[in-house]
Image: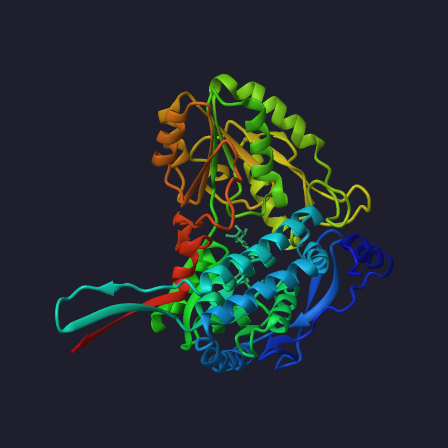
Length: 496
Ligand code: NAD
């Protein structure tokens, strides 16, 4: 019988070690040691201590992985789509079957709660299942040119795709890009974040077991500069899918430019949750709470700004603060509501943003401090924090904090809510809470965001396209549109 994550957690807390973690890169269907033998450590954020080590990849490892992907591509793009579909469905089933182990490792590596990690594992399986279903439906069209000519289009895989994966959703971001790439017939080289390397390695092995041929899916671990940079500038890469910060994303764009490599960039945001005076207040309170405190706020699409109409501000804030204060922080492998911050470095960044806001005179109405797990006195945690009535130009409104920090903006009407919602450089998500369908539609159409939800901030699913406008990036992942990045159209015309 497969062990539950709770069983695995018990063994981990007793020994401080994790059994069966992969070591080395995953290249050509096997784990191989890094070219230098250099290792890096991965930390358990809930205890702020290392629990395992992994290979520090470099340009040589990337070259080996790309060479393997070239061989894999030759096999995979000619594998009948129906067969690719069967293999990816088998992978989804395997992920579900072994999901408890994956959720356990994800929790340990990222700091998130087990509940969240289990959700991510289900999303991961869904991505493979969803795009398995698309693999044999990538149809072209015929173009009428009149007698003597026959013209049609085919959709072919773009080639080898590179995937730079962040640390906040390692398992689901892996699947978000790699499932459609594989369904389209591409071969893949992935580079997970340096603080969360393990789930990508595990998934690569499982996909291979499910039937993905050697070379089709390769994973190289290591630092962004040492392993990520040589990957995105490699001339054999046809498309880069990058999720991470704006600064690194701009660098990736520049590195890809000389080879004219295609890109999908998912770069974060400062998304507004707009609560209008006529909303269902309790629903808005719960929406706002989990829009910012899920995954300890380390979400590109977090609702990090609450734009609230003045007449409901006091009541909404009072309820929200009470709920924020009641959240239990703790190690992800316990029953905590909110887990740890992924790294000491990132905890320092969050604290720096909040300290600067305090120094500017911003009103922090709850939280505001880095803290420890109350059970163990260890770990990297930050209190659920709310900063009230912040000016539109303040850095707490303009800068992505990427932590459990909500900035509140007060508005007097619908028009002001739209103006304020749009007044940052980002455009990823917007949540709207109102009972008035007319207002909901006007706001949904007027707010510059890749996706808008009404009366449920996280409404949606794998089926719904996702991506940003402006500095939140470009390209769409998820949904049927998500496969477009991994195919290109070839037009064939015959005179006869
Ligand atoms: P980052 O953008 O530097 O890292 C993201 C990924 O890019 C990691 O896998 C990293 O190894 C890789 N990387 C780094 N430098 C690279 C390079 N030169 N070439 C190729 N790949 C490279 O993000 P970070 O430093 O881990 O976090 C900083 C900020 O990024 C956070 O505070 C947050 O605002 C943002 N962030 C956003 C997301 C998101 O989902 N959009 C995810 C993680 C972090």
